[in-house]
Image (cartoon, rainbow, N blue to C red; front, side, top):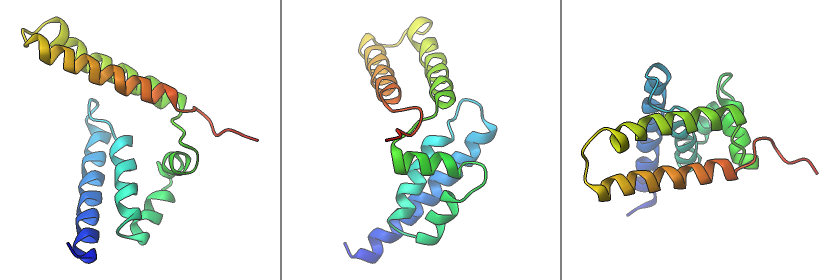
Amino acid sequence: MSRQIIRLLYLLAGLLCVLVGLIGVVLPLLPTTPFLLLAAFCFSRSSERLHQYLLNHPWFGHLIRDWENHGVIPFKAKLLATSMMLVMVSYPLLFKSFHLGLKGLAAATVVGALVFIWSRPSEPVTK
């Protein structure tokens, strides 16, 4: 594929991620931050102007900058992500008759995501 097509695909993916992230602002069970982080990644490969817009946005720019510069996930975001994941996975695990393999896959996915989230620093490390 040509370089321009790849840039266009990154741009479209970034725009889609921003759209889903903005929908997540009003839908409580859809997370916003992961989609905006993914959008920032896509824009860093396709549009410096849109990447800078996200980095300097007054509401969520600091979250993206902290992630890009220090790999930081704020403590409040960790708590919110943990509670949302536990709520979302508890219903199918406890109350629905899903195949045991699917329940195991859902539980393993949540555990893996939680291990990753809680292994990240909550604040930038100062030297």
